[in-house]
Image (cartoon, rainbow, N blue to C red; front, side, top):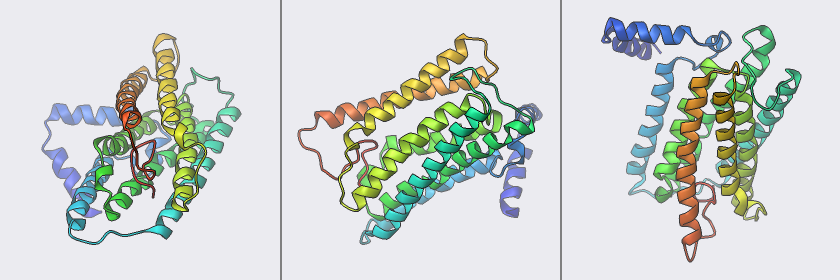
Length: 278
């Protein structure tokens, strides 16, 4: 940890006073709840992403001349655990939104102790994005390198970084909407992977990509609402949400069209991210 702190201080010392003042100002604007949570240092978040990318691409190189792993038991545990975790987070987020008397859209972030419980569960949601990096590690160890696509890596990296910003500045309010949706989608997705590992067909398999894209579309609608109407939720986060959802709609839409146009598709290919069953 001392090495990381020294590296961080070294980078800060190389910044001009203007950049350093801007950085300090940006950090001062963080939500009081978030400042007490772990992994809210942006430098640490960036290091986690760099570590993820190094592990993935170094792992591909190392595994090139090695035999692939089956990882049956580990895949079963990983997917099953994420089904339970996603279900728990979805239930808690919706429960907290009800306790706080949220409307569908237009909810502000409560910086008082009343908003702390929702902030905690949303931080857990952010942390779960690190756990989901294991999806890629499994691919690498199973040598499913074709599935480590730009879409897959971009989705994991960008989601983690954007959720860092969302949780640091707005761990509550309208943030509940996209988090609850994503948790529900992940219950469906990881339960599909869990069943696929056991060679059991999931009836909802063919609808997963459409469900993902519906999620992105609903998030766009929320972003438009926040931007158009006077709400207490930060408008700049709505802009980030809108732009990001458009990129995901484009990438997932392109993947969906390509998948539909293939004359024959391997039965072990995921309908959501094109990755092999775990």
